[in-house]
Image 1 (cartoon, rainbow, N blue to C red):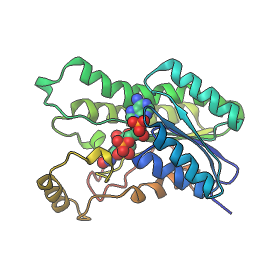
Image 2 (tube, rainbow, N blue to C red):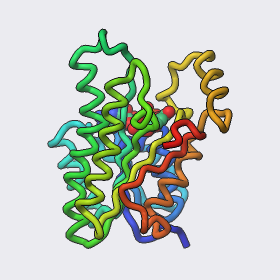
Image 3 (cartoon, rainbow, N blue to C red):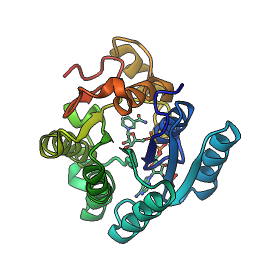
Length: 248
Ligand code: NAP
């Protein structure tokens, strides 16, 4: 028996990296999974197919999470397909870097629109169904940088810090029916870290109490916990698989 038998989950940004790992981890525990992507259609279909090959059920659903109409269509499609959405993982995100004095409004907006407004838009469309059915779980993937901040990432740190506050506020608003929590990973080996230098990696590894960057597999169990019955008494929390980076 899986921890998520008879549940359905929508994972935004499920085509790659942490989102892919969470979608596959949920499916391995028995959940039916909707894999959202923005542009990586082939990758998202491959995730869905690999879940089906393993005996699970999954669909790939396109939507830019910062586009209100696309989000509405995506959520309607998932609800049509699955009947309801029990677990929402707001994972889609993007990371760019720039000193504040060189950052233009478009760069600021791209990050805020995807990481923060995207979380609002998808949640706004999914939570009414959860409240109607009397239960649901929202899991927001934020970052340890939303807690401690990072230079040349004021936009990303602000968006991720906003997601943590959004999590706390919504948890107070939609309990006891819906639990809302966040995961704040440390540096995790995905495409998002493609551009790091060897020097940055060595410095980071030396700084972290656990002396290594994380893998997607270091994050997935936290998502499974929060999505399953074992997570029923968590709400408004931010759990941090981060190798000891933030220690908030
Ligand atoms: P990734 O490998 O770059 O994957 C990003 C995912 O987000 C992709 O599936 C991408 O879809 C999707 N996405 C981006 N913009 C989107 C949009 N507007 N609408 C829909 N989907 C969108 O990144 P990752 O490392 O797995 O990161 C996942 C989450 O963890 C992000 O929220 C990130 O901020 C957070 N995080 C990552 C780290 C890290 O070190 N990796 C640390 C802390 C927090 P496409 O494939 O279609 O482009």
